Image (cartoon, rainbow, N blue to C red; front, side, top):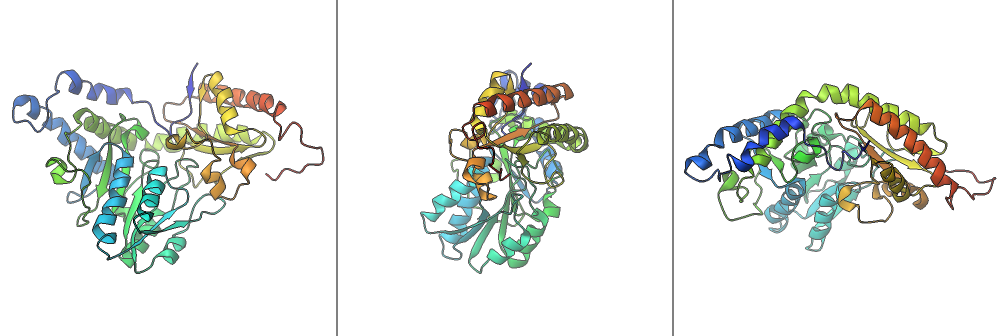
Length: 396
């Protein structure tokens, strides 16, 4: 049996989604901007898909939900668009974000720093989150944008988005949230949250890869990054990915329908796995269960490098990760573990386990068994664990 516990990296396409998008590859394959029937026959499905996206995040009719290729594109668009609109013109020069954002946010901000922008990277507490007060204290009259993720991709910790949104509105500062790890796991309401921009990606909630979205609140201008046509109301040029849009719309509808299942069934299996892992001596899980999305565990197992654990689990058919898949080729210590203050040896031991609504009880039982076996095997050969002197006191 192969067991997939890396659902924060990507998810299986829901079979219902696959059935809905299949006709748009070889039957209704026309360019939707063409005037003939091959183009126009996809319009009804596109309208349904867009309605599902608006409804799924509670966007108003006068807001924009723009389809992109992925959340990385959406994030780059917001951060660099704000640079063109406000910073380049000299009106503002400051961006606020956190130390634990997705690489798409961090790298975009680092790039803008080379162009003269000032960026504040807020530190997180021991649970891996910031407070709204941290944001408020960092805002100046030169702040153009605050970008804070809704839920962290590695720890699953949920950030106080509503409180931050209220502060940004009061201060007249634009607010973007990376909603990638929130959509499909917890209720996402852009009106209630008060965000100006929200990025998301279909493949994180059982939709197809290669399609994402950007919510833009009505009245908020954002310079386009892609030019060459009048697609998406002139906001984002490029031939529409019909199958991707239809699939993302259906995936959004199913994600909302399954929120109670996420909260109850998925969380129960996550807690079962987490409780079993915590029975292993000298183990630490980042963040409280109540403040995390229902599917995620980031665990540090003393004496075992994360890559070694991945190799052992993978050999036994279990997929997990040491953190963000977008940084998986970087074998440096886990940046989130570093941000919460973990020592270097612990920051190298991070293991992320993330479930989905397709994860079964049998899979969790097998995973528990294999993780326990892996810990015994790897600690037996660990230079930092097996040979530690008897008087050594663990700092976990």
